[in-house]
Length: 266
Image (tube, rainbow, N blue to C red; front, side, top):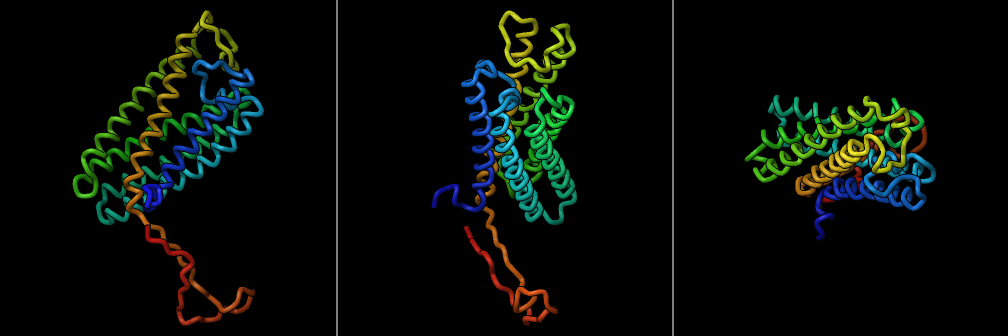
């Protein structure tokens, strides 16, 4: 049995691979059509102009669904392992809410381009990166609280390093972007897709975009740490029959029979 066939480990794997593919395909398309510069454009810039914005939006919407599924499965796993730990229950619920808000932000970023709806796009980016960073932090605390009974120390330290990486990237991005957009570097900063090294604010622009890509990679690394945990989860779905037909008739008792729709122990 291959590693991605064990349990639900395909979920975080598919999430990372699909999201990375969305970035790569939209980047290649935008570069090929000369819509952006090849040197460190904003991730959103590669999905601003048609046709790449269509590809970018469609793929990120699917990525948001995969992310919701991954976050929910992680929530149910922690809940099952710690049914009576109040502190862990609260952290787990907080992580679920933060993760879902981050997924909502990802969908907003995918569907509202910055050159058309800048304020909405920025709100989506704040939800994606801000709530996503907090989600990673909460999950790292959970990993610490659950060791050594349910989690090894190695997993905790890896996630902690990824959270620190994410925090440094976020601080750099916020600082440089604030200086860039509130400085005297022109009025077309928002809609600017092509940068020249001689342009004012070029250094701040490069640092900001590099930090944005770096932050995305830290997200990828964090979700990849779920693979080993998800290998220990099996999925079972059962259907309860409430009648002997599928017509809209009065309910017919079936002696509490249960028909298994799908059962897989991976």
